[in-house]
Image (cartoon, rainbow, N blue to C red; front, top):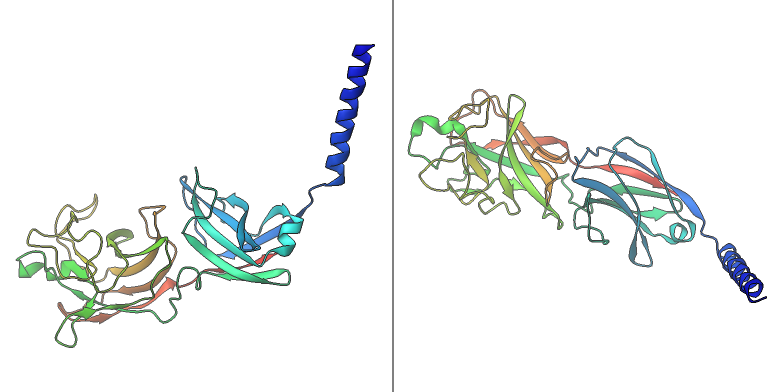
Length: 289
C-alpha cells in the first residue's frame, strides 16, 4: 500500500512539472546575419553576436565561418524587444560571459532590420589621411636611407605627425606594415600619431644608434625574416596602416586597412610622401529578425 501511494505521488510530481513547463514554453525566432568584409579569425578567436535588450547584452551565438547569410535561433520575446545588434571578437575559450572590448559592428534596429557598420563602433576612417618619409634614423649610415619608413610630415621644415586618424575604441590598435613582395612585415602597433610606437625600444629590425623619432615607424636594417634581406630599398613596396584587434588574432594584417600606398620608384629620401585610401575602410551588413 505504501509503495503504491509513493508511486502515485511520484507520477503526480512528473505530471505537475510537465504541466508547468508546457504552460511556459520557450519559443525562438530566426535572427539572420548578412555581413560583408569579415575575415576568418583562426583557431583562438570567434565572432559573437549580441542583442541589446533593456540596456543589457544577450548573446545570439558564436561563429567562425565568414560565409553569409547565417541564421541563429534566439528567444522570441527578447529578440522582439532588442534595440541594437553588436558583433564582437571573443576568445574561443572565453571565461567571461560579457562582450569583449573588441566590438567590430553595431547598429540599431528599425523595425525588423538593423544596418550595422564598423564606423561607429571601431572608428570612422572616411576622412583619414597619411604621410610618411623614407629614412633610417636608427643607424649612422647614410647609404641605407630608403630602408626605413616613418609616419611623419617634415614638409614644414620641422617634424609633425604624418597620420590623421580617429581615436580608436577600446579593443583596437593601429599597426603599420611594409609589404615585401607579398610578405607583410610590421612597423609596430600604436594608438597615438605623435608618439613612438609600442616596439620603438625593442624592435629587432632597427639599427644600433637609438630608437628613432617620436613617431610610428621602423628601420629595416638587420634580422630580416626568412626570405628577405635587410638593409633593403622600400621603393616599389607597399606601405599600409591597418586597424588590429587587441588582443590580436593573427600576426598578419587585419581586414580593416584605411591607408595604403606603393612607394614611388623615384621617391626621394627624407621627403614627405602622401598615402592614399586603403583597400578596406569600413565593414557593414544587415541583420534581420
